[in-house]
Image 1: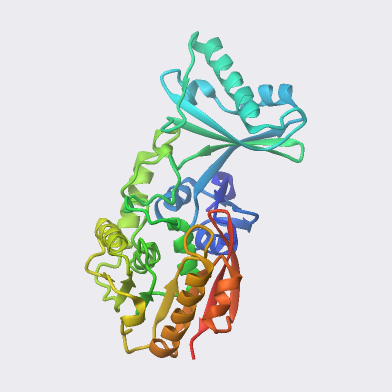
Image 2: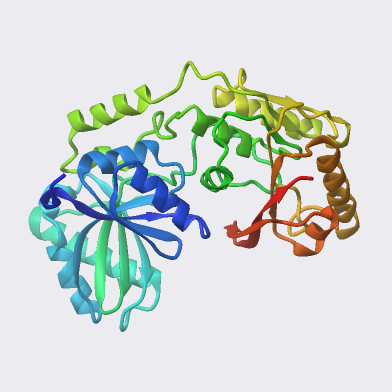
Length: 380
């Protein structure tokens, strides 16, 4: 791939999964991959950018940089935005748009105010061209713009996603403390589970960990059934897009025989939600949801992997109940899963001690703003 046709772009990812997301982007063909804080910068040609939208599991958004210019205040921003793109080609008054802003510059300290300056520059350019202007649409815009300010410059990007990429479409049913799909996919990536061993979640909730694990093992692209904003870009290449869609479809391992994948959930209502999600993901033949207390379930006899996001008391569960729950979970793992690898997402170190197990790895991640650890135990 020649450097001349490479685009600069950024993937917005969950905090703690930057390195894992960088690995994923590289595996899908991205170049010059550099993990940062909640973001990974990279370079890609258009085919690769399309591929990432269809196949990448970890990003929230993929932002294609289209302009960068010095910015020391409002005037620089106004002039820079008007010259950033051929707006006659990219934003006709019949189209809607939205602007999101991160970072600051002198006199541009509030994202809402800065977004208003970008909007003013764009609608002034439209009025000069056509005598009319676009409307703002925050929910489903035709063109989604992202501006980042910092270090004396502005970077203008196009958001190709058309809504956060973590929304796969299979989960209408949400538990009390939902784990986002892309975070779940990243946690599974960190376990190394590849579909060759049994996988058990003893507190499965809405089953998102099991669903994301199974979809990854089957190599089923998360973006195949959704519409992307990039399909409305002025330089959208439909033949290239169709080729990447076909490529993503052909990657699915339809002949893969998976080992037992079991979710255990004591609450009948939540177990029903999990089954609904599994069915919506097309995985009813692969994942079994058991409405039982995990203390009463026999695990598969061959070695496997446990993944678990039990309550940690920030949203649901009180301390005494949690101590009992974690104590029972630790005892169950030692009795049922000796020789297994267990991964537990913890947002409360005070209750994790009740497992009475020593973690061999502690990976910091953020779950909905809660500082968590993805804890790896080698069960003995």
